Length: 168
Image (cartoon, rainbow, N blue to C red; front, side, top):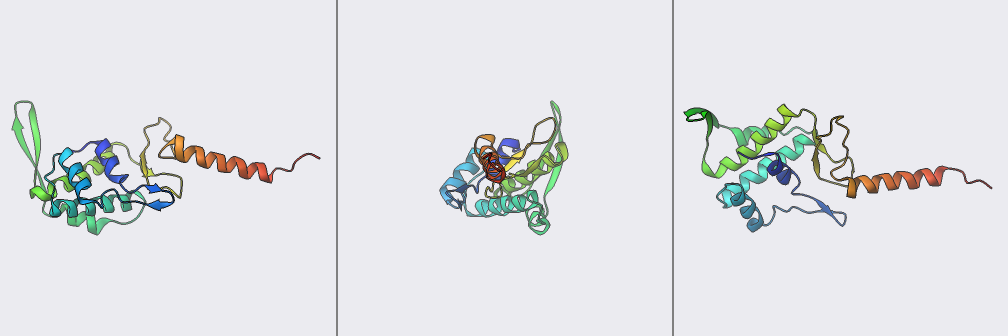
């Protein structure tokens, strides 16, 4: 099963660089490598499912409605309990090429349940990344304080400086 870090890698696979949005998953080889690193098979069908799931989760995390695409990814999937030496283990019943996309959606659902309201887009409107706020006060606003946070704070400071009348 995918973890929070894998979920964030998927959500943040469309960063903005030099003012232009890039899709790190547009390169089939890159996405196949990511899939294999996370227990996938690689290949055209798996890539299609992963991109569909990623796009739907980005939409949902941004406040949009992604229900039809999420329903498409999860259609017919079953999570079946099986007793084992360490207790009950849950196994997904889904085609192999769709399994990783389903795990991505389930990782998102688990984060939403465990940390409600803490998965959100970066507060920088020019950024297309997401953050998982683990702060006690739930006040994190930026994907990174070093990049987006500093930029926005500097812009606000410059705006205040320009608005403040200078002594004569």
